[in-house]
Length: 571
View 1 (cartoon, rainbow, N blue to C red):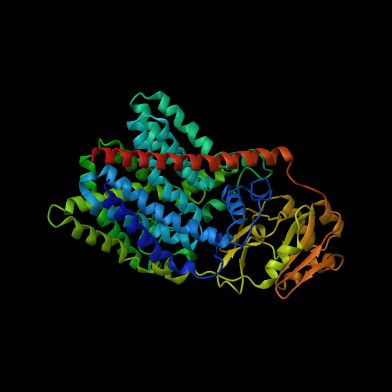
View 2 (cartoon, helix red, strand yellow):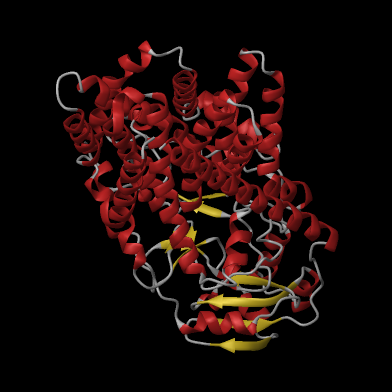
């Protein structure tokens, strides 16, 4: 790629990313559903996946805990969210340039637009899953790196591939997206061409990139299986006039109807999906003529498999099969939010958009073809702009929150919170969000993991947190809480009137009483902390993960420096 093409690629990606995310740069902290940021967080056992809860946010929470010791945690989350969209645009644009070179710079820009401006990105932002978007972004780069490894099996290319696998592994789901991509882009082609060594090394590199959450799963005390009843709740959802298949083909269909842009909640969703599929269909004949190209073939099979499996998983037989899987197979709960896997369709759609520009370029200038293609993608989804309809707005914590963070130390017992449940709707946010307390306090916070979705309870398993919560709600003696490792009880709002908790709270010392929060101390709590050996192993896994990313970055810098020096010699 020329310097002009690189500049165009980065500027177009940055422009679209800022058009979407500009509101998040206001002062404050993002508290929107799964997106929770705090001024500072800490590498507690739970943050490293060693608590009672499943390690769904490993190594994400550890990374933010470490970096927020130096940089405000709110800034870290905002910067990583911008990076996710920016890297998605650049990665998929570069993939289009690599696999469909005849589309030129215009085709590359069309791929950038499809990668950033689509319902999948909109819905995952509204759901607050910014870290999953890092995995989504890494998919394009992983395909590009896999191509380079297949062309030249050298340490530098493996280092770059390992770095992007680690970036995708910011969450376990992102890591699994990377594994599927690696299988389609490298392992299967390597086996088909007889490169057995290459096919064997690739899974090993992926395992190294996934060590933080794999080690946490092995050492943590969380239940290894999930609630089968959650499968139907988290299945892909049919949008108006589209059905499940149409919604998935349009890169939409998230399970949570509240995390959907307004333009996708009416019959307009059909128009938007039709225009997106028109762009894809325009480029498919060009891709089909190049079907022997390994990149195109891999992207096609990956995308087709993702659509078919996600749609099937929303049918009664598919739900039944997945219910059995999550109930029996450890870790299979990661599969239940099936619409997440629509991310694997992105490489095919981006290549098709670039190919559409190439096809239209036979009749009109390619720049004009890219403009038409981009308009057909952007215009039907106008409310993705400006924070997905101004929904991504930062909030300011009341003063009580920081004072409570100062009151509760580490090593004096775990924290139990009322009201029960994971989700909150605070007056100072205007959004439903996860409780920020586990990320704000030095002490571990006991959470049952129970979610209420559509009035239905899911993931309400038997755990130390559930037993402690039940004891508090029934007014048990404080010694019962102490035996369960509870050192502190945090009351949010006026929830001290819930159940018979008043009887227990009346016997506890008040450590803090503010307008929004109250803290009670339980004397002599039992210790349930992870062992020093387990902590050391998890820290090693996390540091290895950081090293893998850093090694990939160094390999990129050295490669660019080598190319620059080579061009200077030629000139």
